[in-house]
Length: 195
Image (cartoon, rainbow, N blue to C red):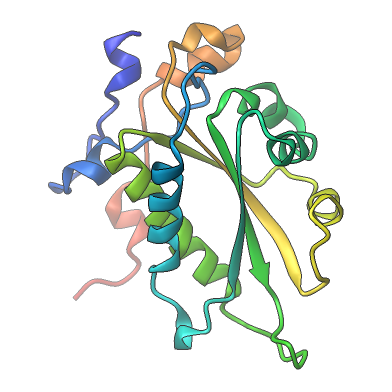
């Protein structure tokens, strides 16, 4: 593995805690590496304890380790470029929105809550020595059917979790993206008002 692959710190304008400074979203995963049941439980527990609007917790997960039927079902429902690399991850986690409660009332903050929980999952995974890549290119209907989800549970994202491999496991274009400098918009463009 190259040093560049293992460490891709930010060029942030302010000091960040190391877990945030070092976090990045690889596509080059080691397809021989595994995630233990304890590590998977830890990242899911972090997701469970994320903040939730009114503590309604309108988020659910399907967690599948490579080599299982559930993992195969998730990979079968990845779209486009995601299908070309995500199969190497140690685990895939489907992030599911609970769009309404049992009485059919909309849960307005489900997307926000799911995002919060996946952010917590990401930080915990990094603390476990793992890396995460979140994907929106999924077949939600296919995932719903594969896991026989109730209509009010809507697959929204899939998160790959695993150990980083050398970018050479990817095609040339993807490998170049893997080692490209990390960028974000400047803080003064993101923050509209600061007094």
